[in-house]
Amino acid sequence: MTEKTPGRQRWLLLALAVLSVGLTCSLGFWQLGRAAEKTALHQARSQQAEKPVLHGQSLKVDADPSDAQNNWMHRRMVLVGHWQHQHTVYLENRQMNAKPGFFVLTPFKLEGSEISLVVQRGWVQRSFTDRTALPPVEQSKERVEVLGNLAPWPSRLYDFGGEEKGPIRQNLDWQAFKQETGLDLPKFTLLQSGAASEGLLREWPVVASGVEKHHGYAFQWFGLSALIALLYVWFQIVQPRRSPKIH
Image (cartoon, rainbow, N blue to C red; front, side):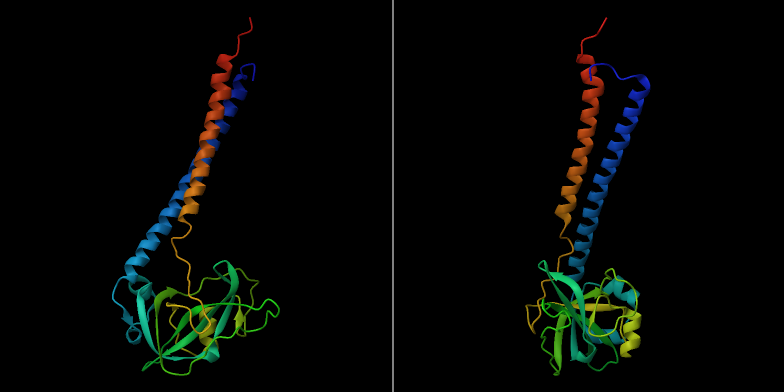
């Protein structure tokens, strides 16, 4: 710029600069807030997981989802009973270690109880040649003991609606699954822990992962905000004053 910007245009540029700086700063603080939320959630889960191990028999007394959410969620729990393999569901389009596959869910009948708890048993890779093929997963009929952490019902991925049937599904609706199986299912699950077994991996993603990404995005937004401010100051304040005056 070799001449001072006319007054009206100068005010317009100032307004645009202020709005741009405000917007980019707000986006930066939003990213910091998202990072703080994930960090707090991770800390809360870690604190819950450090509490004494619960026994599945306690579900006989109180299987209220609200109590589970407030007092039990993410705590370690041990279940004793039998798998109900006839109701196993393979949730597709789930990833582990950046590989597509299935999350395998099986209801678990608690010993001495009418309650069954859906267990997220692990992940298995799907066939690339036959999308309808079910991957091999061991199916024990013996009395077993399962250790894991209480977790919410599986999150829902985008689908085109409609009721899903069969072992391979995109989502699992709690109410519909209860009616389909006739089982007494609480609206939470057990995320099975431990090393890979039964043909399943259990390297579940950590909730706090992605905090660095949010910090990186925040840095970019704040950097853009600073750049806009510097450009405005340079071209609208510094540069006009440095330009020679024409008499």
